[in-house]
Length: 361
Image (cartoon, rainbow, N blue to C red; front, side, top):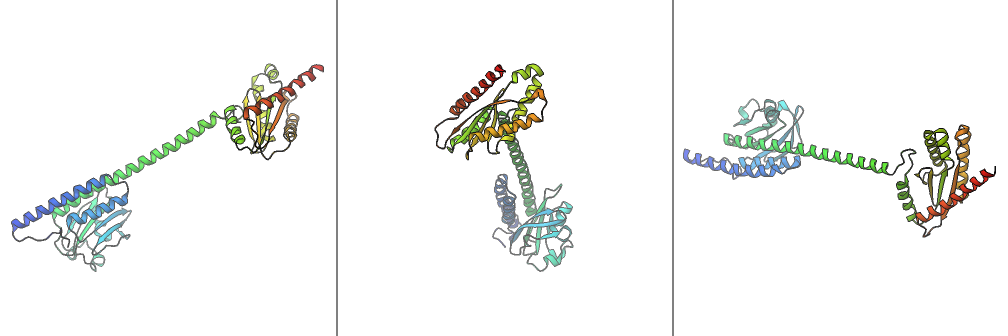
């Protein structure tokens, strides 16, 4: 028996004084435990606090923390002179803790050998002679706290009152943990939703709505990342020829369709690692990272895909493009703007030569 036990006093007055002192000391221990339970954020903390507090404030020889698991009593924590079996799952009808949870009642047994609710096969071989059990959350018990002694007539009504108050505090702590866990999950879920929304907005802010390609902002970001590696690259500016004429003749819907078709041709002409973007209006850019092939390889690929597209398209919607291609060698100091300027000049020269050629015919 612990020092803070249910020791007997001689006279009735001494017994009353002794019991009062025990109860007051028990309340002090209980108040300290309530404060600890208020800050518990894990069930493991709650069960350790509940088990040790129950034993200290009643002076018992052992204590167990039990959780209801369907039709079983799960002894999740247990310590004392005669442990009931930490980790065991016992059917509700075969142990006192199960009876207390099933009937939503506290149990005070002065002599386990004289109580029909006791399974003598379970408790008889142990040193346990008396015990008390209180359910946690009486309306719908989720568990129980059990304390036991190695002598008969050990627990009293004061012990039961203290245990009931402890069970109430444990019930609140478990509910707080559940609410805190749900709140954390909602916060985590909300944070994930915000990240997805942010990513979607970021993607939209860098994606051309008509073609699905990178827009000017998106292309610049991706292209500058490639150039910063210093391994060399090719940059091509592609301009759709005669778009104004198409818009004026067939309408802007047909013109938009032609722009989308040009984007499709570009996708089919380049590698997966290449960066393709619509810079605005009828102008597109392609940046090809190393390893590099001759500039004519890219030009020929574009022409081949363009010819294939035109063979399958109506005569009035033939797609024509002007292309300017420049190359930066590995270690080049040329910036993206330098490359855009040079490629733009070459593209304009090609477009101008087409205008002159058409005017002669």
